[in-house]
Image 1 (cartoon, rainbow, N blue to C red):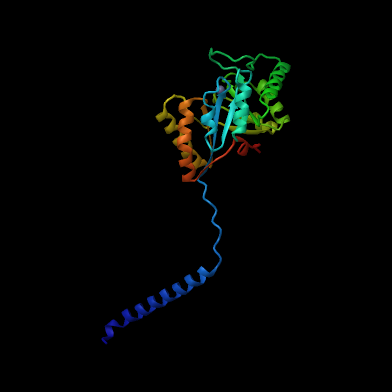
Image 2 (image 1 turned 45 degrees about the horizontal axis):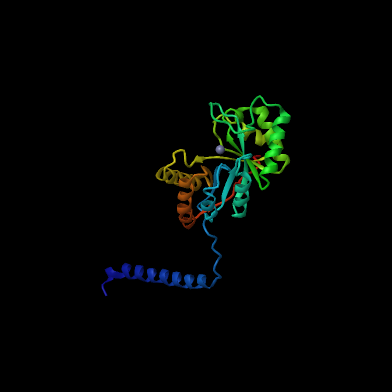
Length: 262
Ligand SMILES: [Zn+2]
């Protein structure tokens, strides 16, 4: 054998040795008990459906959605109690959707909490509403672009929410909402809306919003989306959510992610 091939032979032997060691190590490693694989969760998503109580039309669709929904029921409407009962029985989470004063001239619900209302009146309304929506695990604001900027009234509401061991979900209809800051100060469980799902009542638009919500959950770990008691919204969710579960997203109630900010 020519001497010039000697380094090549040494290299080949060396490589064979490496492969031999690798095979031995692999065999040894395989004998170790397999580690339990946790399913990888890409992100947690809380979907809130607002404005239940006007009618009963979409209850069956919501009842057919197997993923967790948080359903915000308006108080004092003809179908408030029945809707709350049905949604609770379907396994969804029910919260009180408390009407609060907006800035614009909109049609207001009876007993909408207003900036100039007396403290005892705010407490009376909250007491009455929570007595009606008995399954409520939390409270969220219906409208409220004016009220959620008002420290005095929001403090009364959040103190009551804390006293009753509920959480507050800020629908976040104004960037100047004081609720987050106050919740932290008072020490009440709090969560905030990230994405509105159905500002346009069109299936394609709603689908795109659900995808944005999913992307946000992947980036941030948690995302909260709000839609409304409308056929298009609920049908889109019924179609899309099982697929998102397959992709590794987990649907949670707002009660599972609302927390006291330290
Ligand atoms: Zn609402």
